[in-house]
Length: 311
Length: 311
Image (cartoon, rainbow over all chains, first blue to last red; front, side, top):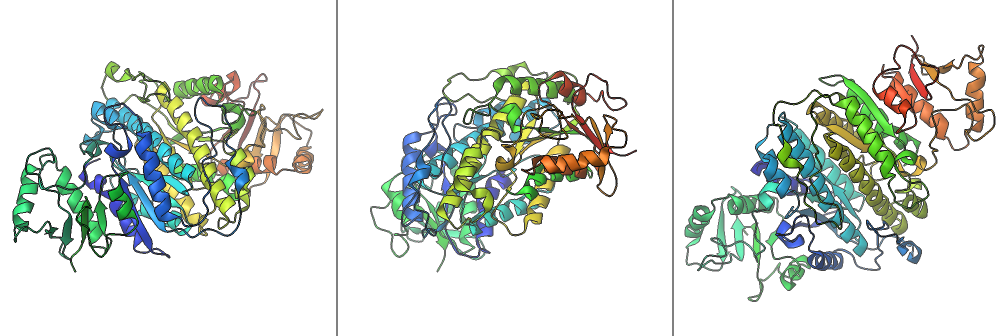
């Protein structure tokens, strides 16, 4: 559960995408702070999750849509009846998506109490913490899969084994990639979860800033261009050739490694030719990004960060 | 989700076991009928599951044990406090186990409504059924993992991709095996789920009978010996060289394929040198089997079926 693993879920999803039978439309990373209530232990932000699910469904599926969660809720005796409404014709046209989500108020308590992110699985506390963290994050993953499925998105939860038990991490990453690819090729939407520890450091903001967004003078970086060698510079806002300065500012303020990690992760994906949008979930801004309305031109009233290959 | 897949979870778990760093003590298959309430939609048999978890913990772990489920229950605001009680010394001695469970009243409704076990994922109903079945069975898997973890068993849920989306099923089985092996080597107890369709046909009985257990004259087969070529014969009860006759009786009554599949699956595992016990969960009989008390001699008052390599 170190920075390497934070990268794994999204980046290995991205590398799976480049060898697909049909092209991938989008990898959506849902921040933990957007889909959970950050200060309430293991509580989902139902309102945001519903809006996110609806926006995703509209961007993915054209044509009729059917609920795919036919399970009862804990404590409810109601049996779902969605099954009878089916017009069972050939598949409606749907774009290929991967969803990756953070942990927010799930997993963090268990991970930080046990120090599982520091390794040492032979210690009982760390081992217990691994089990407890995985239970918590798996519960969240299942809830997100259910919300998407209820909306009509054919979502399949896939759990990366994101820490600890193997010394051959690369092999695990490869196995995950192949599951993601198989699910995509069969027309499903893989739903992966990221890291419980780092994720909790994030804030629910509009995009990437040059310094902590709470500081005065913090500037939202709207467009970042990545070069083949992995270096990057800010295209928007125009800074009169100050992009190097911004890089230094970002690094100087990034005590937790969160922002640099985020940009590096995005740069790895952008290098594959895949545009990355970092945007506040469940807003008009995320909706426009999902529907591909920002590819040619970024409107002045759009708030978010686009990271893509330099032209 | 055909018979091939019914075999996959347990048999690939067994083949993972033979290359382990430390020997595997036991693969426990929990029947769906034992751990769920068969006639109540998606309802867990809490009482049985608690007894099963306790029996497993006693068989697995010697020394102090700590709860490993630190998540809240849906609808409850209580935050678990088990974390503070830790005596964080080196790992207590624990035996290697794999748990495989059936689906019972989970998954069956979704699978049968959609016909997902017959394939045809391009049809919307089947695709939705696949998603819905997986949600249902994953929910059950998570509940079982939580029950075991609460008892102090370091359980890790692993979801075999048991149907449909790949034409190269063997590759998937290999990937699953490697996850199972990695989890075991790191000291965890992998918890896999089996098949939602076939499982629902099973009945909660003492073991394998020569005909449906509800029929008059049905005889519990207590010991079955498997030869290297995969053929098998009944050692107990002694049938005055009638074992061939029993084989015919089993086949003749096995209209659903359930019993022959069960014996074949067990025989595949027995051929690897691993003893298979088919036994009613949460009973004194299962407890004796788990604790290895039946290896040398089978007491007359023990009810169950042992399938092992002929000596």
